[in-house]
Every structure is written in C-alpha cells, then in structure tokens.
Length: 252
Image (cartoon, rainbow, N blue to C red):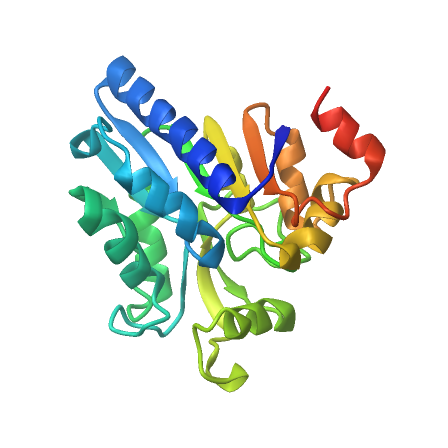
C-alpha cells in the first residue's frame, strides 16, 4: 500500500483519474479488455468527473462491476447506486458491458449471477472509497475478513446509515435501508490494483484508524495495508489526523 496526500480535492481527483486511465489502457493493450470495479458515494464525484473527461480511454473494451447496492432500492430512487453509475460513468463514456446490482430482486439470485460473472477473469483495477466508519464497500465494522464469497448481504450499522443521510441521499434516517448487497473484502483484495480516493475532513478519523494503525476488522479499509498494489489518495483535510511518523513514511 502507498499513500499520496494532495493539496486539494481537485488535485487528488485529477491524479487518481490519470492513474486509473493508465491502468485501463494498459490492461486493454495487454489482454484486449479491462475489467474494473466502480465505487459510488459523494467521495467519488470529482474522481469520476475527471475520469470521464479524459480522452483516449478505450471504454468500449471495459467490463464494469458494481461494489454495492441497497436492498429494496430500485434504480428509479435518487439514492440508487445503479442510477449513480449510469449517470456518472456508464452513460457518459458508453460502457456496454456492466453488471449492476438490482436491489429489488432476490438478493441470492443477484449474488449468484454477479458472482458467476466476476469470477470468470481477474479484475484489473478497483476504484474504492472509505466510509466515515472505515468501511470498504458496505463492509461495516466488524467486517468479515474470512468469507471466500464474492458478494454478501450485510447489515448497515448506524454510523454508515447516518453518513448516507448526511450526504443527502435520503430525507430521514428512517428512510435509509438497513441492508445492502456488498462486494466482500476477499473479492476486492483479489483485484490486481486498487485505487482508493478519500477526500474531506469528515473522513479524517477513518483515515487515521485504517492507515495509521493495525489491520483490523474494526477498521475494514485497513486491510488495504496488505495489498501489494493499492494506493490511497488523500487531501490535506482527510490526512489531517495522521501522525507525523505516518506522514513521513508515506513520503519516504
């Protein structure tokens, strides 16, 4: 794992987008296709905007998988992550091969179908974020580091649900679903490369817990410390609680 700290969210997003574009282009050049995992949420807005504006990315040869979706939420709902990905990525660049998680269908059926697809070949690059509670995808603490499944149904903890409310996706806490379909830690860690974008001061405590401490299911994204090709992109606000030794190590 490596960490880079940027002076602004814009600089973070532009650098991460450039490295994402490079990863996709290299995969297509080497194998004729690129398989990616796309993240959602407010932390990904600037990154996806920068990525979709880049020229020369062979999107027609990209196959995309989806990190997570609320159980019971349809694509017509403003909070739907399927809707988010169509509007902010798929429709903008013309990805034709994608596997969205339908929250209105029986979860077991959705999981069976997407698992069959994602296991056909390795994932070249995964885009991710870190939740205010340290979650990776919707793997809230204590996250399951042991399951070998690719997707599971998870219970969302109160901190996670409050984050979704605070970001404006739902009108009240009672409207935030209590369950989601989530890609597992195991599946995310099988990606060849992981790019994790974590801007904003509200993520500072999670950044400290996950990247300035031990690997623990109580800080789910801390598992990225064990991935040999993961990169964490922070801005000055999200990095503000890191210890001086940790910051020096990141820049060594």
